[in-house]
Length: 403
Image 1 (cartoon, rainbow, N blue to C red):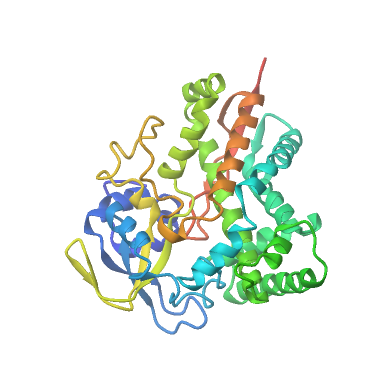
Image 2: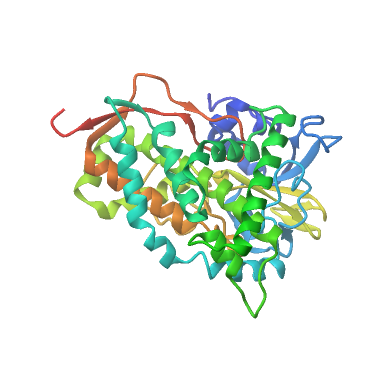
């Protein structure tokens, strides 16, 4: 995309900008907050007119909104249940959010994630073993199946359903690759599938996360079936898509940086800084939504009560006010301010799992391949969802020792 072009807010939902949003962010960020059309009329059943909202792109505005859940609520989004399935935690505020997070935290612990490390490592190496030839399309062969298999294991789901899970996950986020009717059918199928599973776990527990959440109690109170269902949908959709995009973005960036690859092979202490800088530089989840509960002023602009607000994580993570030389990929920077996983009470529950999968992935690739370079086929960014930033196709040439 030509960075000299002049962009308007209405470019934000175009396929070209979804594939490469950062030049647009650079031009529009100084104007934030501003109004734009999140969805035009007629694109989604249930919304008769265009859906207008306010854009937040500057880091301090984004951080303020994420930390102030009383003003920027997650619980009144007009798109919940119409455009996206309602996902607990993501679409809740206190006191319900507090109760739910406490319950889930008893089941979704660091110890559980650490115990998964051998399994995740085995899955990673099994996928790498299956790669044949020097040029490999890594999205379908690796970055999609790894998190799907991990999440399926966590939830206790049968392997034969993996392909269906990916279709359902895409249906929950994609706006342009399916008809509204097809998309709605997939979402209904997903809800029915997990609804039956939750009912089954009430009577027959297993060694999986659904059973742990079903059993979890705080002050004697357990979750209702529809709440457990919402957690299953959240973990399947958010955990799968975030990790897939993070892994693809990271490998793409490293394919263009052979010197850094050699540094990583010699010094694995650089693995985590690479992951964190990838999260900042090519943020896997680009935007999410809030609604104002009161009139609020940001940057001299007044946003009215009851307004839809789109929080652009990707734009905030390249704000030059917050990050020196933000358009450069650098692993020597202070990355504490990045908001790739949000902030405040809605900080991503699955962040430790996503980081663990990325760490295992990068170490496995470094162990096997002396270099990675661009493939002869073209890479292609996904353009179906304006929420995520990642690859639909990423061919890479993987060089082993002695090649």
